[in-house]
Image 1 (cartoon, each protein chain N blue to C red):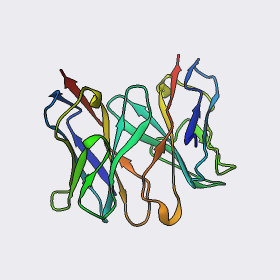
Image 2: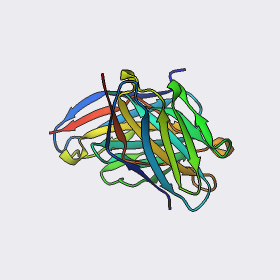
Image 3: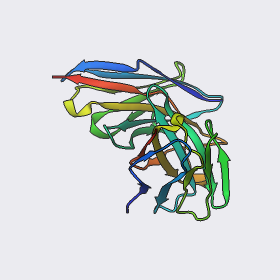
Image 4: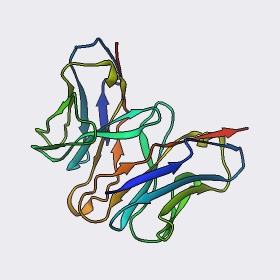
Length: 114
Length: 115
């Protein structure tokens, strides 16, 4: 079985501050990992993904995430928050072998203060 | 390419009414799925399909039916709507076979209210 835990349903930062959204996963086989972003009243779009290549993955809008197998983590970071980053962020895991149906975390709402 | 297209975007139903949420994709994806999104619950899988003629249940299938007669279309049917089905529904698709990593391409969502 696979699962995803996103720590913190809401994260608040000031504009220009570091963004850190936490994601821990469990998987019985090597995982594929994803971060999606959902802007208000829109669908989800892919930010970045890890599919067993480089452990540090860069995505759109200067977001990046690092796969740490020993910590079973895939935290999302951005050096400097922008007001336009305010959105809901979802971490997801799928298995690299067998079923590819992803499991999603419950989401983290990023609030950016001016 | 339009990607994944969902209709309608908004719908209000009365308890007991039936309706169909439409989903179409033009990327020739083999895998299609329906999720519902509720506050604090994340995304929960309702039904999915790995190809035309093949469907299976997800985490929360009760009260919903699906069919997959073509690669492009994957409608979601509510036979007798209940207030508990008030939610935002997302259709998603992805590659099949060896290209499938679990990465999903989402539609814009359909917001359903059941009174």
